[in-house]
Structure formats: structure tokens, C-alpha cells
Length: 129
Image 1: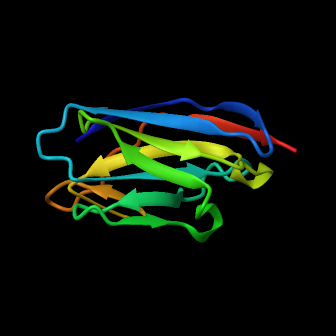
Image 2 (image 1 turned 30 degrees about the vertical axis):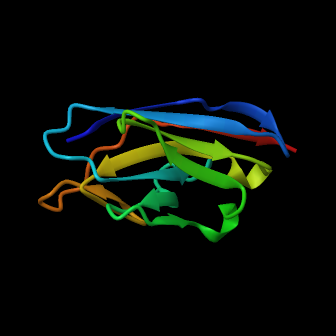
């Protein structure tokens, strides 16, 4: 399992920007893929929606609603990555989670055996109109 700690959330007005960070540690295997996912308010039991994920080949996928506004990047140490969120909209309000593993999909990230990695606590983003 990869331990994950998200930070950087907060309250921002529509049109503003935030930068989320994700720090990974404790992995017993190479972390080659990562992603950001979000869970909207009022649906605590709902599956997390994919925001973006990066494959082991470096290909990056974004959900259509954030294309051109959100950018994912990896830190120099490769154990921290970021989600730069620009032109935020009220509908971006959610708890944001990062995940990481040997591979990722629209549903989460997985270890080399294909088991899903655990989720961190997330960081809350609230966009006011």
C-alpha cells in the first residue's frame, strides 16, 4: 500500500485558483502512476469521480469538465505531485483525493497484483459563487 496525504484545499471564489499537493510514502513497489479524484458534497457514499490520472507511460487523462483549467504535475522527488486548479467553478466543490500505484484508471490506482490502493483523508475544496 501507498500512504497518501493530501493538502492545499480551502475556500476560494469562483474564478480563483488553488494548488493541491499529494505526498506519497511507504510503498513497497515502484509508484509509476497517480491520479486525482473527487467526491462531491451530498453524495458521501458515491464513488469518487476521476479528475485526472497519469499512466506509467506518462500519458495524462483529464475529465472533460476540467480540461484546460486543471494541470497535474510531479515533483522532482517523484513522491509528491500537484494539481493546479485554475478558473475554479462552484461545481468543482468537492473533497479531492489523490491515489497512486503501479497503475491507475478512472476508478483508482492499484498495486502490482491489481489490488486497489487505499484512499487518504482527502482535502476539501469549496468554490463560492
